[in-house]
Image (tube, rainbow, N blue to C red):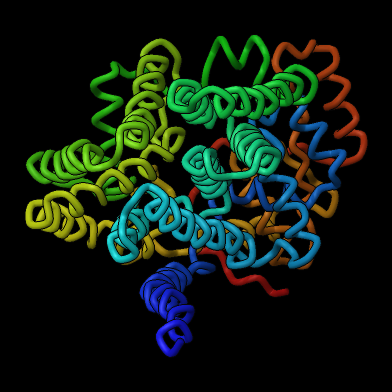
Length: 475
């Protein structure tokens, strides 16, 4: 009897001791990610999110149905956040993404445990995901890519647990996670399709039927969304032209750039030898580590790493769609697979793991300390200057009380700062164009704007030196 009285407390205390290191790691990343989160100026894309999400929901959905090429979930969540917290300071705008990052680390730990890693070995993928500079950029910017990672992690968890979940609960969890991913970013479809196909071949009999129903339901809702509301992306011009700012790349070059970005981020470069070493450690460690897991789980990790990347680089060979962030979730599968290398080959895996973390320490630090503007070329002493604020300040001296401007420079960043930090709004109005819009309709839109405002500003560049030499705002 005495022994039996102690038995119930042992598993609980063991679980508690296993959770303590995870909590410490989460708090450490939270503190590190908070460092200067609100200091760098918002990028143009972040400023667009801040101003767009503050609009009424009907305006948001109308824009998604015309020319904004993204699904609605992130904007709807940020709209709710703007109502609760306001959207002015940079820290507030970016903070939800940081919370998504913490949720991603927690889900990574849970996936490690469900895949078969021990409590302590499950911490290794968590640390790796948190160290990866490519992940770090997107959990500290006000864009939908942190939520994209979380949604794919949730769908992967639903797939791994599908055999153990009750019928209706498992079906709803799998369908909801797939739909969340599809309506967070369109390129999530590469990963949702991969995980869906894995379930068709990896699950048996009744489980397979329920899995097909769950994934089919998500794809049906997505198929309804695209032609009815998602025409900003799903239109002939967008599908035919790709991203007007991007370019086509041969698969081998696209793949090399994706690997380089994963280990060293957007801003940091390195000698070819270090690039090759970092990429080799990440890829070889993940591919070897996947062999540690049981056959269906191994297939899931390998498929999640390989198939979306393969489909994306082949598509990018013909369409200008290249950007490494579109396939960001592959790193979740790579980190989980890498944990298997340490579990199966302790010495080799530990050396490879530590070597990879050491390679990423400096890029990770510099990614936190530098704003996400890959095209910005500034000296080491001035990279953190909040230039858009200075430009917004200068515009206060130049514009009349009823002036308005369209796209160009000033851009959405300067609209955001003028609205958020100064005594009057610049009157920013982005012309609501859409592909194949008749010229007559566009003309009516411009006539309406010019009927409401005295001047339509459209500037293609600005003189940064001249702006910095201007006197301070007397207001």
